[in-house]
Length: 91
Length: 271
Image (tube, rainbow over all chains, first blue to last red; front, side, top):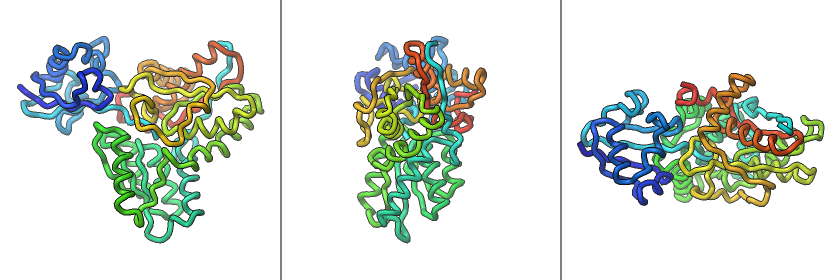
């Protein structure tokens, strides 16, 4: 189930410079694992040691905050857009 | 610890954060220069707190305020800014505050007669506010015995201004940044990967430290439970850095806590 994943510039170093990727997976956990297979180390940037989203990483599936739909267990409908949002810096 | 910690709680300012100081001084400077005539609108890019502060100052002094702010900043800050009467332009959250800066610059370029772009990242009134208020207050409130000042770097106005006021008195300045481009310390800038504020000058600090988000969050929660200080995560980050200084050096170490935890109640910080 292909989905589009958009990443902030702050994660560019974890994906070989890409900020827009096509990935697949039925849940957010699967999507992150799919990206991690191609870009090892990506998952550890957004997930903590327990496999949950890091407190400061916000992920939206479409307009919905993934945390409100089970966090990494949130369903990712085919064709949807997943956005990883950074903290808002400076002022 | 070898040093003692004194915290300056900027949540006690009228609109709830350290940004009230820069906002007031930037607006007053624009008024004194005759820029804020009838029909003029104050414009700036903000991650939230400066926007809230500008909105409050604009409400008090009778100016319209328009704020470029990344979509997905905490709900509280958007609602508070709107409550003070500001209008918001929400920018691509993936571009963060830098995207909001670019949008504010574009609007100011296209309608220079309509907007007064106060530009907190480049406005000398920002550090001047801290040179003339924050620094002298700290000196007075510590009975002239402050030895260190620890604060995070966002626009850098606080560190630059306080340094100008207190370094000549022998106070050592410690500037702290996030340790990674992807961080959760809202309000702080990872300078190596962000648009560099024109007012920033590394030379104003005696020491530069970095802070991780996990340690900052843990300290933010600990501050509430053990000290009764309900802070935003940047306050926890600053205190964690100040504790590291206090373990290494003796003295009266002043740490600035920029805002309160209420502003983040809708975020995972307090879940």
